[in-house]
Image 1 (cartoon, rainbow, N blue to C red):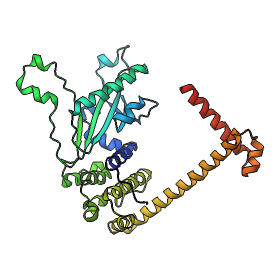
Image 2: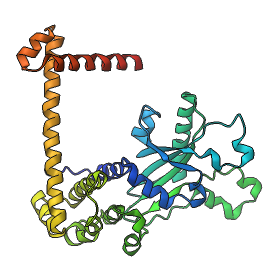
Image 3: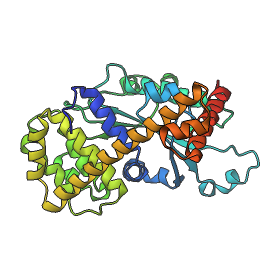
Image 4: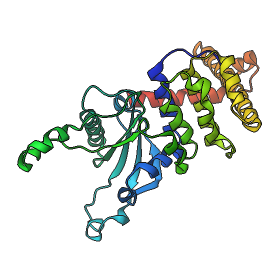
Length: 332
């Protein structure tokens, strides 16, 4: 691995977004932190990570780390509601955001902007308004001690006035306030215990030199499936960036803190990733060469001879490019 650039906040963003890109890991978080009284209404089998094709792109790129949707279980609603012919098709939207430091403004005001951005997108796309549940992941260096805006008014005002004070709710996953012993006991989170412990200590540079073993022990002796491999790569890349150690030094520390089986697994995973990267680069070069020649007016059979490619391959590249261009034109 090459020497990472120093982008502290970006490092956290990439790691947490990577975790939330894997449905299996997102479900672990939802099953642990979503209130049980709420879980009965969520159809977790429909979990989907939303993209700009499903929701306003500005919301995804500027406001939120990730947004997942799940269908509402109609069968769990009271009978007098679920049998209504005018019952809208509601969905849950889990609005994920992470903070590595305490915000300067009330967190609920920020989340309400996000909530209404989602609902505005629903209206724009002629959908029923979403049930938006904000989930905040906090792992700052200091304790989360911000009061809700409502709590500043509540002790001093009567109910008639409090009725006009915003009181939005959100779920907080306060990693900083969770002890290392508590993280170790969260067996239902599986490999995410390694992520939690690393995030909790990400502000301590010496953690990666002295205590990395504490986090890595949660990834040993586990099935080496696709989800594990993706998570393990993200974890090690995040650790390397946060440690600010030279690659050789970091690699030595990792190998000292993994058993032989996991050391071999790690080497194999990164070798395969590099091979895939090379293959993708070669493939992209072929596609670009075909399209450059075609756009200069050279016939497919001539391109096939020049690049020593099957004519079917050349025609497929050109057809795919034309379809993508047409799709882009329709969007505009």
